[in-house]
Length: 120
Image (cartoon, rainbow, N blue to C red; front, side, top):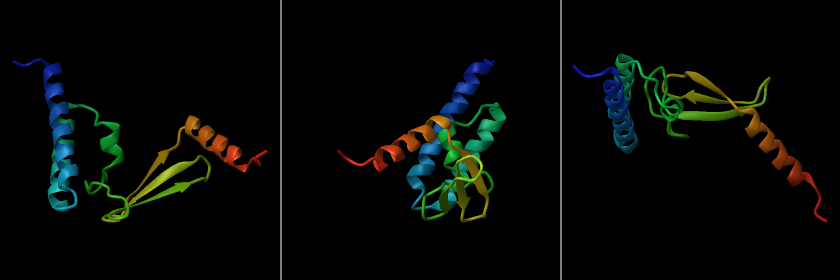
């Protein structure tokens, strides 16, 4: 019988392979892409592993579409309350919000202040 750790490692590898295949086929065959993504999600759920951040940010949780900016998703930066990014899936209409980290906010503010200073 296999150890639990090795099962999780195999599952992680399969998820990464499926995600890479989904990216390579995305423009040519979107339906195949959604099948790859849903398979990767099912494998991760069965093995009880967390999906990589890149995978979670680049896919729709509702319809399993791979986001291609300007084709099937819309990305907006909002400043209400806390600055965040809103990604809207154009296939199903689901909106997902990702908060911007404070370090990133400070870097943006620093760049804005630096640009506004008059050169000597």
